[in-house]
Length: 115
Picture (spheres, rainbow, N blue to C red):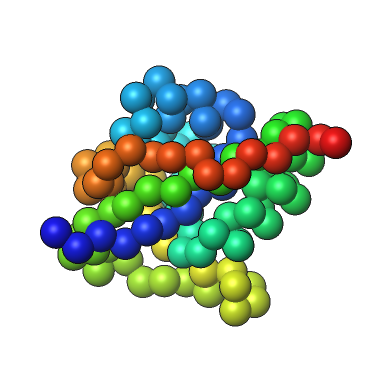
């Protein structure tokens, strides 16, 4: 099976829910979060975790995970800003199925906190 590596910047609350899943899945979206946004590159994930998550919750984390490449063909890559700012838009109601196509564990590859 071919996989694609994706990244997800998260705050401490979402990270705890990922840990509780034994590093296998992302938690369901909240009602005000209709879309799950994994990003396509590490630099963009770092920018969000460092600049937004730290500001909003005191710490930010970049997760890295692999997803079945064939499954991902249903989602177009969305450019949401500059050339670096690319993400997939996964409707909240499809997140459970998305999680089933994660291959291997979700890993924390960067941690940011207030200095």
